[in-house]
Length: 271
Image (cartoon, rainbow, N blue to C red):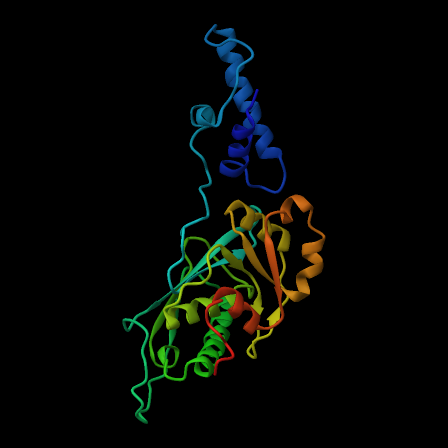
């Protein structure tokens, strides 16, 4: 008999595919091993399988937790990505190659044009999203804090960990923009927030796909709040209650709304 904790560990640590075929194979493997032990007189029936005995029976877990940070530092934002294994959290990390946030000295000096270098096997579409996110966040920051010229002048690096895994798609747009702004302001995003949404050059948040898989990833990482495009509300409402329970979902149309959720202590209208 498998304890509930063992079944959950099998699902999260060994079998993340959309169906249950792999899960069934692992359960069969466990049963065969116990049947052999019973025949040899090494075990009695019934036998209880706990999560602590899974390594001995089916080997080490294939999948580890997606949660890399307990509290994300400035420049790091949790996004949500679609994968064939049911979705995953996708951290976007941004660093200042020049050293840190730069403030203007008030003089009419010509600033160098800041650049962003990407790493982590980002595809063409994702690199285009980064270009849009950089252009938008630079203008956004200029309106919010004119003396902060980090995004205008400094060389930055944006990295998405798990570099061996190719990544592509436009849905990380708001995540990238938020990471850039977080770094430039030296302000971490609100805790336990994950997001997905394509960003337009004017700050509109556009529809994305794979909502179910991304919500599953959020639940797996114990995320408390997620940000989705307003146009994906129907996809959210079609999800079973078991997925939506304990998750607060914010539906946004413009980036101003994303910013207010991620940086609740900063008034975007103060300027």
